[in-house]
Image 1: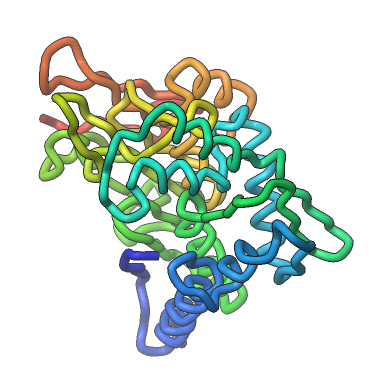
Image 2: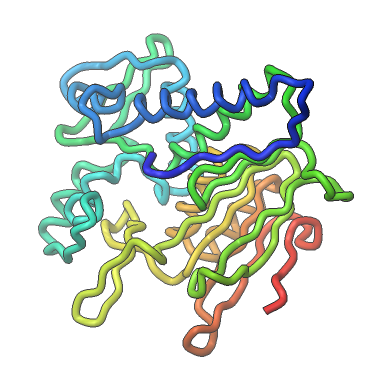
Length: 311
């Protein structure tokens, strides 16, 4: 998954929590081997090779991840789409070779994008692509999914009070951080323009968090900046926000929705949070002057989870 995974917990000499830490990290390696598209022998690569010609049976939990991806695709009106790989290819982001494609190339790629062209058969756990040239990529859900699976393992073995992190963008918290009287874990959110500074502090209480933005993956052509988060509905880079941080019950949802909200923009994100009270978000938009930012907090009682940094 091209990132480091970390586990924080309060261990004692008399428990076996460290054994579960190693087991959880081994699980991440196994999930990476299953989900990656950068190895020909992974289950997802095998699916991408065959699913346009025949239904392909996949492991039960992987099928469940497909079902969640389809659900989030519907809920976000297509803003989150795991089939958008052809667009990343045509823009050069998949190999970090950014380029501006022609309208014709964008449209040709869009013909191979769309969750509506994936058929899921729950009875046999099979996947079928309804258009040739389609592929799936879980880069907008994979880290969160791995964190959720790690949390399941810790729960089975009665390991409480843990903080799990995938890369610098996805976090899952269970129990209470030592020394935090009000419960939960405190997690900082970095300033998207000044990454050495902390913009805010969020409190997670048996929740997960994910941040999405195009602050590090972008290219500039003729004075215009193009970020790597693409709107699968238009085939072009999303813009208008610096970053989006989402709090959700699961890390998979948090990661998917942070990407989707970045694409959807503030109003659509607010509409989503209005009907999903368990979801909260912190959107960072450009401010009135160069270098300034505007914070938009959505969902839940802001005072219960958000504290701005003293900058």
